Length: 91
Image (cartoon, rainbow, N blue to C red; front, side, top):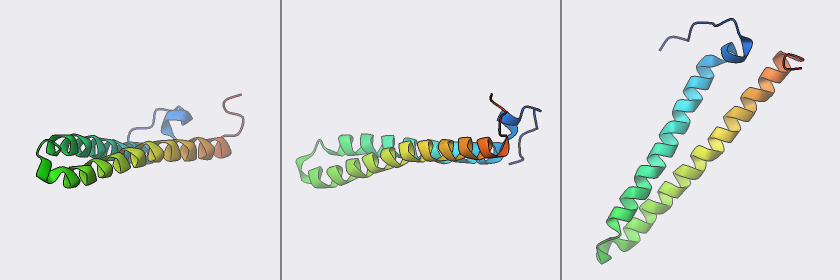
């Protein structure tokens, strides 16, 4: 995938490729977590597979938490890096 065209605005151009990749990873984590939660809920119906469905649902919760944490982490790192690079831009 090619990097996006520069817009001339440093807010949008700063590490645009990283932003797109990080958002994709976050989307995968959140989607996988939701799918695992739904699969765990669907498997909970038969009593024989109840323990297995609990593990699937817990895995889904872990993926959801990882997706949320990754979102906060990469956005904070992007903001801090931008502020170090462009001091006084937003004043």
